[in-house]
Amino acid sequence: MKIMAGNSNLPLAKSIADYLDLPLVDASVRRFADEEIFVEIHENMRGEDVFVVQSTSYPANDNLMELLISIDALRRASARRITAVLPYFGYARQDRKPGPRTPISAKLVANLITEAGADRVLTVDLHAGQIQGFFDIPTDNLFAGPVMSADILSRHADKNVMVVSPDVGGVVRARGLAKRLNNAPLAIVDKRREKAGESEVMNIIGDVKDRFCILIDDIADSAGTLCNAAEALKAQGATDVAAYITHGVLSGKAVERINNSGLRKVVITDTIQASAEALDSAKIRVLPIAELLGEAMKRIADESSVSSLFD
Image (cartoon, rainbow, N blue to C red; front, side, top):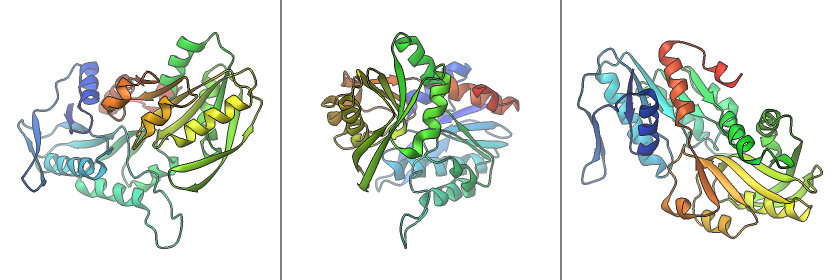
């Protein structure tokens, strides 16, 4: 078993390697003067079971090309099996046609990864579960729920917790977390999105009065939804509001927006390497996910059950 890291999230790759007590593959990923990406592997890969850890986060296109070129290099080096480990799968929000003459980019990216030579994919909290079906190779979609629930129970067990989905589409995820939190009650934010990156909270479905509300979502990009939802929940009588997010994209003025919001804390996992601004924020905390990924990778290498991680 070998672990190779791209440049998108080296700290996470090193944490996974530490958990598995393995060194990272000796490889260099560099750029020519015109920004073309070049990958060179400095050790024998023939017959090896290789895991390439690379989130396709910002800059998404550069990191995606690094992943594709790394997979191609490993295939040409005669690796026995190549698993693309994408803690964050970019382009996942383009999983359908929202209007005429628009692409389904998530399927395109799945095709690119497959054609590059990946034998299987490992990812965390896909934006839409059906994206697994976009791949023609085995795909394991891990859930951050167990890591989040353990953190919530250790920090907020004494509070009157209610799990809140920031939209109707996230109800299944929220219900799964609520079940892990000793069947905590569930509420839903009914919102209307006028255009991408902007949302307007319309109504709260559920009684949140005197509750410690925990918003759960897979992606926080502009953070507008989270901040609007927090204000609406407090207006309905919630005592406090925190958020647990798998992928902290946090683009543009998202961190500033969180700092000025009614959110007590936003907890993000390290599927995406947090920016310096996010790390400096008193309202943002990073929850490590290397152990979950490392254990899944070990089970894939051992040909044992991955789904039993979530029993």
